[in-house]
Length: 147
Image 1 (cartoon, rainbow, N blue to C red):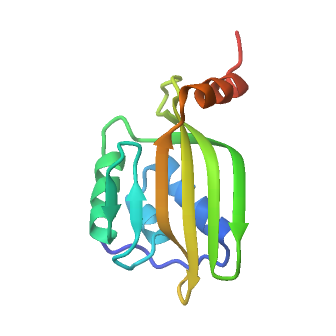
Image 2: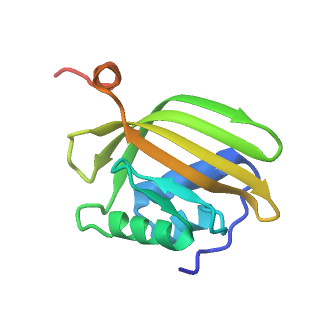
C-alpha cells in the first residue's frame, strides 16, 4: 500500500489525477491522490461507507483488479466546485464506460472533497451514488446519440 508520493498544487490537479488513475485502473496512482489519515471516507454506489486508508485501498483494489476493468472512460458533466485555501468540494454527474462495452454505467451523482496540507491537495472524501430515474433520463438523453 505504498502509494507514490506526488504533490498536487491545486484541487483540480488532484481531481485530474484521481480520474486518470480511475480510467487507467491504476491502484497505486489512485491511492497517491488520497489523504493519509485514518479519517478519510469513501462511499461507493453500493452504499457502504469505508473509513480509513486500508479499507479504501482494499475496495479500490477489488474494483480496479476485476478482469473486465482494464480501462474505463468517465464522462463528467454538471461540475460544481466550491473552494477556499484549504478545502475544495466538487459535485458532478458521471457516466462510466467499462472497457469496450458501449453500455453506460450510471449516471452517478458524485461529491469529492479535497484538503490542502503540507503534502499538497489530497482527496479526503469520495461519495458516489446512483442518480434517481428522472436525473438518469435527463443525463443519458444529453449524452446519447441516435444512429
